[in-house]
Structure formats: C-alpha cells, structure tokens
Length: 261
Ligand code: HH2
Image 1 (cartoon, rainbow, N blue to C red):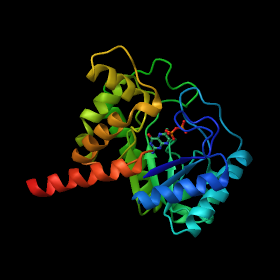
Image 2 (cartoon, rainbow, N blue to C red; image 1 turned 45 degrees about the vertical axis):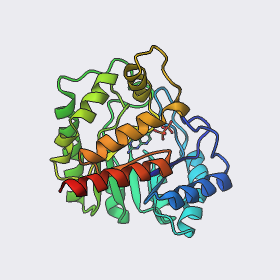
Image 3 (cartoon, protein in one colour; image 1 turned 135 degrees about the vertical axis):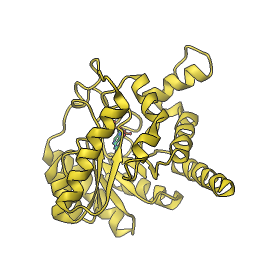
Image 4 (tube, helix red, strand yellow; image 1 turned 30 degrees about the horizontal axis):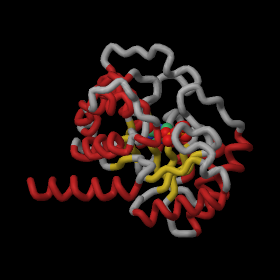
C-alpha cells in the first residue's frame, strides 16, 4: 500500500501533494512502482494534529480518488469520517482505511473493504502518557472485536492494523512488532504501517549507537527493515511511502520464504 497524503501538514510529506494533479501523478507513480493499493488521505493523524472539517477533507481527496480510479489504480481512503468514506467509495475507492476503527457500517453499506486500526484516544491527545497493562493482548482484543463486528455487519474484506505510533510509547510499538504473530494468529490479514515513523528514528539511533535521531525523510533503512520484519512475521500488507524499495525487499523476503519451505 503506497501513501498519498493530500494534506499541508502530514509528518513526512505534508504539502508535497496538496495539488490534485501532483497527488494523482504521485499515486500513479506508486502504482507503477508496484503498489497494489494507493491510500489517499486528506487529514493528518500525526500526534497533535488538528481535525479537518468534512468539506475541506472532501475537497482534498475526492478529485484524487477519481483521478486514480480512472487510471485503473485500486484506491483506499484514509479517513475517520463516514461522509468522506462514503463519497470516496462512490467515487471508486474500494477499501476504507479507518484509523478510528468505527466505519465498518459504511463499509458494509457500500460494499467496500475495511481496515480496523488500533488507536488509544485521538490524534490530538494520544501521545500524552499512553498506558497499557499488556499492549499486545489489549490491541489484539480490540482489533478482533472490531473485525468480528465488521464481518457480522457483512463486510467481505477486513484487515487489522496495530496502529504503530497511535497512542503508544516507543516500547509499545516495538513490543507490537516483536509479537506480530499474536495478531497474525487471529486469522485476519494484518496490515502494518511503520514507514518513516518516529519510532524508526529511535530505532536508528539505538542501532547505530548514537544520540542523533534521523528526521522523517532519512528513515528509509528503518522503514525497509521493519517492512521486511513484518512481512516475514506474517503481515500481508505494509503501508509505505517508498514503494520501489519496499517492493524489492518484499519480493526478496517472499523468495527466501519460498526457498525455506
Ligand atoms: N498511519 C498513518 C496514517 N494512516 N493507516 C493505517 N491503517 N495504519 C497506520 O499506521 C497509519 C494509517 C500516519 O502516517 P502518514 O499518513 O504518513 O502521516 P499523517 O497522518 O501525518 O498524514
């Protein structure tokens, strides 16, 4: 899954694809690089981000969804709003990527697939001292409950996603990555999105034994290492900004798995 953020303020590519033509060109490029799905979002969910009004979000994403669908690209809509999800599906998107995990009824009513992601609180407040007794079990139980409800509502394609960085301390994120098999064992296909996230800055500093934490645009190795890790541990999809490199890594991981089988 390749990312196109039609926003001025996304943490790693804010402002680059606010122009519709630039966003469509980038999405087509990601599909040509090998993305099976292009995820279009019009509201940043980075920690501390302010919500965007519905009209503004619709104006950002709809022309991009239409342009990509017209070009034959499978599109997912990254939104927490029912109106935006519904309009995007009407415009041709076929997957609702919902960081609030509340939009299963829209997916059921429109026939779209659904990604249920785990988040503690909301983006404005989620990084204020998040606490879990057992992060892996709590995230799994939440996701299974949401995914089963989506299936019961009639959604045919349901994904679960641990929500790396959404109301989680660094060690919570690493714990979830280390124990991905617990999510895989639920039987629902797992999506993992680590690309360029701040935990990768910490991972890089830890790995390189330095106190320098690289900025978002300089986290490619961490993005690729965690994508490879997630795929090897059983994730079926990774959500990334750098598609060419990730596809090459993913093919190598799968070839290794095939040679070990
Ligand atoms: N992370 C982001 C956005 N959407 N969707 C899913 N399913 N899982 C995620 O972990 C996830 C997501 C945040 O990344 P990005 O879109 O690059 O930044 P921003 O929210 O600042 O636009």
